[in-house]
Length: 474
Image 1 (tube, rainbow, N blue to C red):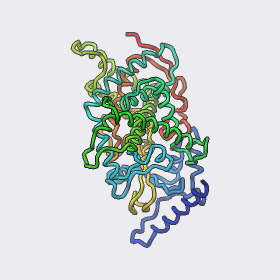
Image 2 (cartoon, rainbow, N blue to C red):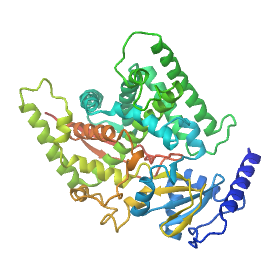
Image 3 (cartoon, rainbow, N blue to C red):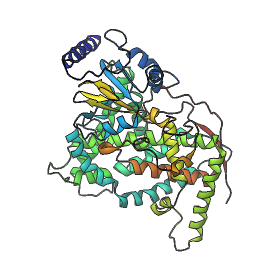
Image 4 (cartoon, one colour):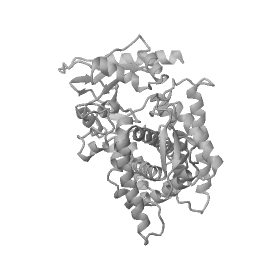
């Protein structure tokens, strides 16, 4: 493995020399350090991954040292981090001409090379044409009511006065919702198994890509193979059965797509079901946890939220024409303050810290030359916390979003052709959970430690955000 790393480092260095041919472009490269010979700053990166400050601490320290555009070298490749709205627009609106999406090797191997996260520009368009129809307004309307029923049932099991580790509960809730939506899986044992396997995959995303038995990356690959094996079995059975299942998997097996290339292959279906499982379960649960923590720390915001949510709750009880009292997509549309709470939580938490791209052509970014073959990362967390973009950025203030945010300043779901397909689904899940929590319980966070869980690509609270809940009597 060390020999492979050395070869990749040497190959990368040779490529950088080859692209530095004479040019009329006299722009300098970004400031930064290439670190030690051969290994670059990989050791410092892995140290941040394994610290309570989280992986982003590696970027934060270099932002302070070099400014809003810097280069480094990790895993044998040059990476540039940029943190201006102009750079974000330049890269995200490129259309695959100068930049294409590329994750580090460990992530690509875990989610699969046919995943939306890793596909080339043309393949991404093909995959997206199949997947985008799954997130229609009619689907979302149906999902909101079903998810609300699930939330009501889950919260009913919380005993008044008990301590709830919110992240654990949120992971169970989001896993159950995603498995039902994607594959119609509702068996508790199967759900528990899939939740654990997805967790193993997520824990390995920032691990050094060693395949030795017992390593974090090796365990993540094994978990991926077990998930894919489950999906392959389901695909095989569905293809030989006339039974219809109302889920994403059935629709992916049935649809032909809009570009003439035909249906998705079994590999493409497997990689993208896994990707949606990770995004829907892990990132949404993390965002919910941060949101509850921020609300606990800001009682005035919580009170404003309660006022709105109890009004919605009372209006539903007054409306005798309703068949039931579960939330609808229309109810979410009638919320004014809650969506801003969700948006502010996503801004302050920045669960996805940066968006990676591969440079396809020599480019200029923020006045610096960025070479073909380098990686460029849009530093979302830095944008979300920049005082010139967001006034008093460390303060949790949902009311800031009553005014239109500066273009390309809020990037929780990305922007442009690669914007997150499940954006509206994630927002809906957060709004439904929020409504039921604030109208059903009072709570107090009993461990406010902001330390980040080690090895997490998506920012998670190490404590899991334990809360003591007290049921609100009708």
